[in-house]
Image 1: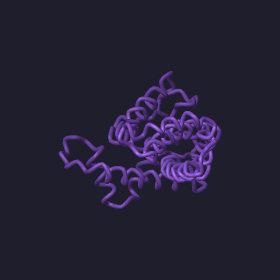
Image 2 (image 1 turned 30 degrees about the vertical axis):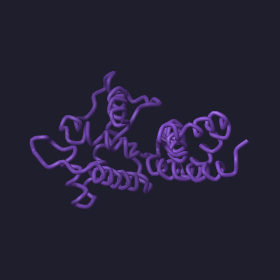
Image 3 (image 1 turned 90 degrees about the horizontal axis):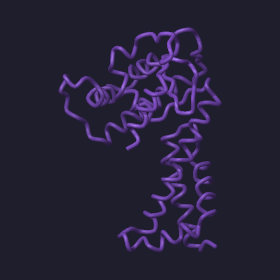
Length: 217
């Protein structure tokens, strides 16, 4: 049975992790994430309590240990839920900052990314659980609407190396990617439909997995 002080700590940490992950996964709410994590952890509390008891041995507080454990479980849960949502609701396009970062890094500044896909095996239209659909024209349009400082940060970070621009700090880059993500999602979900011929640029499954996995660490 969980002690009162640990129950309070669990609620506090779950709420914090929920808010952080809700920012990364726009299809989910902070309260839903926190509720799911609380349920998961209570189901294995003996194991969690044992980990908390050893926090001091590793120079950590109970808060830090619990935050780490909930963040691990939360990332797994939200990742599964996000891709399930995307597959179940293909008409509602929602990108995460991690996906947008991958698109900017791997495709946005590469001219050949804008070639019209051919009807071949590598440009198939089947959507699988780890696939990523992207309309680069929408991304380009979103980039045209962000403030100049955001555009300059993105260009310096992901643009051609021969520009030799000074690299921004990581916080500025994360904030800039978040702005692009919000603008892209806001634009795509104002009731606009992108189902006509040529409206979508489809990445191959292998390319999508490669691009998004490179951003996980």
